[in-house]
Length: 480
Image (cartoon, rainbow, N blue to C red; front, side):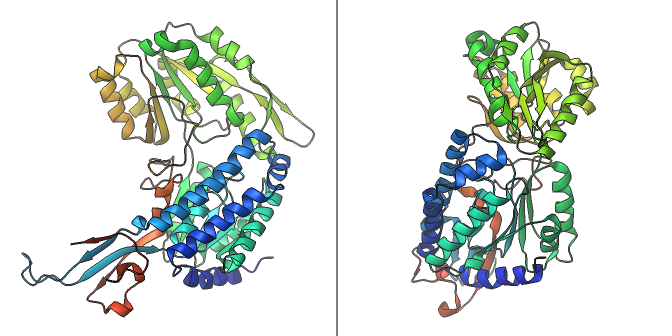
């Protein structure tokens, strides 16, 4: 049994040291971890064995994982994320004498990260949440996902060794297994923030625990999303075949086990797309789901939808092997908009797997109001436009409404492509996330693990390095 109090105390001790590291030291540690992961040829085979994901997919994911670690290293070196603001004293300030006030963003404290199942590298032990917290200067305790325990142990071992070689305490990153241990950590007073990627049900339970502590802490949960896609009539006329191929590819990629998979495709009625969709789906080969628990959940959700009276477009398949793992091909169904509204309680929740619903809407439908009524918050919404649609005020109103309900609005491509960039937003209103003020992808993710601290009339020698006049870290300073 893991001594959770000991884990938390080690994390707190490591944090006190790590939070004070200069940018070059912290960046060097992040880069060392990235290089250690890239150089180890055991990671991809181990991940393949535990998750059923393909070598090509996991090789790309490993590249993404090391890339985002190095991106955060660059962010740390730049220093702009600290948002340093220095107000010099002004005796005749309009509202009274202004003191010397200096403000910056400091590491929040030890972070608990619940690893995800569907990205065993990029959203797991050394995924985006851990990378962002380390970049911020926080120590991290990761709760390993039970779907890939051996990979989790190997990844943590490599990272801890890299930290040690970079002169950083190995306890800056720790790994625990077990839900009970993680919940105990979430309640521990030395843990100051938590992040999670998973189901709405589990995320809500954990968020309530974090909020119900005697000292509530921030909980950044990424939960459920159906990511609606709206296709205009002119878009179908302009590039219908391309859109059908792209849609089916986005639904079936990684067996539909992506948080940005399009769960709903809104198309004009009367287009008769069933045969084209069926043909595209028939080209998709069987793919294993991540683990038996996900298989059971997908089978139940799929059956609920099939039993609801929808029109079957492509039945797809679910084959369960002797170990309980599911092997699937995509299932596509269709409903009229009227049917979706009538059966919304049955149909509108996420199906985690390669299933999507085509919704046929009549000409003249107020889609802005309809989508407002149908869906809560989502990670993404996509609008596929024809050549002249951008000038249509109806489209402009739709986009405005969507922007109030999602974190990212797309006009080309498909939502399952989430690039790691400074401007990327991967979050959204509830139930997409528990806190829609941040992102879990891109360098802006560092802001979740920082808190503002101001020093007033402080002696120079007592100021943190970013706030000093001699600026030993060389970070940007806004002076007023």
